[in-house]
Length: 422
Image 1 (cartoon, rainbow, N blue to C red):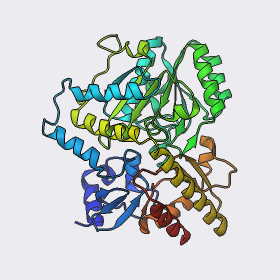
Image 2 (cartoon, rainbow, N blue to C red; image 1 turned 45 degrees about the horizontal axis):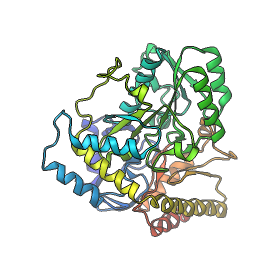
Image 3 (tube, helix red, strand yellow; image 1 turned 90 degrees about the horizontal axis):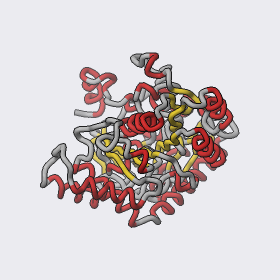
Image 4 (cartoon, helix red, strand yellow; image 1 turned 180 degrees about the vertical axis):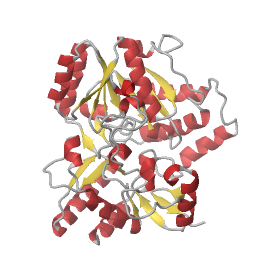
């Protein structure tokens, strides 16, 4: 079957023909390519078309598709079995590796997705503080847990869904909304709900309203405010962890969160997630503490083997982050040059290997409100043109592009060549 036939048939059996909304390309006037395989920085669809991949499965494939070391590690564990729902040595190996190579993680709990990591971290924070309210930021997407689907980014923003039907009012009544990069909005919430806030959860580099790095002074103030008020600071590094730096965005900012959530890269391309942090908080988890959280497939040995191989490869080759920064600089400069030549109003937001091209007249994009002012029709024109030209970019203005170790300068050149013909 070809791309078109597969997508049309899929719509009979899966809502929208997909298993995650943004894949449906509802903001574009083209059908999504049906991906068959990947190799390095390239992916191939069912029609035989080849694309340079700047989506990287929404972040996890930092080492490229079909990385030999990751695949070899998985093959070894496949010989032992697929899963046991019981302790294995490889889950210890990965947990120990993360705790000893990443700052601010004394203990870790493995889960199966970013959503599971964030919702579990919030539950733990509530159990530890014996408080109910949490603060999140407008435009921040922390997964599809009911309590997070207020002023959410990612597909919720792309699809123009106001929160989400199916979420009871009671599920969100303890979710407070602050403005990203605006410490006064956080201060106002703490003044009003002084002894009720259990945690503040934030992406230090937002990736779900487009890429918007937090300002350092904002994060410093946020850290101080949480400490002063007895609230837990949770860094959602599902996207930025192991990506913008091996030790995550918190290492770039020099900020110490109480809990951190991970996913994507730490699974080597397999479904995975984790949350970890201060020992005194983590020990509140069952079975050592009263906060219950469980998962049949958590710590699956196949996933753990892929994750360990991926993280070890990154940690053993830390210069790869300098390489990705170099590619990112080249791509950012090239996009800005093309925009200037063509008289296109845009802003490139980038943090190392995460990037969004905002089509906007704003002088900067540092808040959710700024992001929403973007010309989404212009972005759709851009995305369609790039994809048709063999450059696979996100189909939404409010998602991130990613660079990985498998990308080359030739890949960057091709991106810019295609964009020039837009």
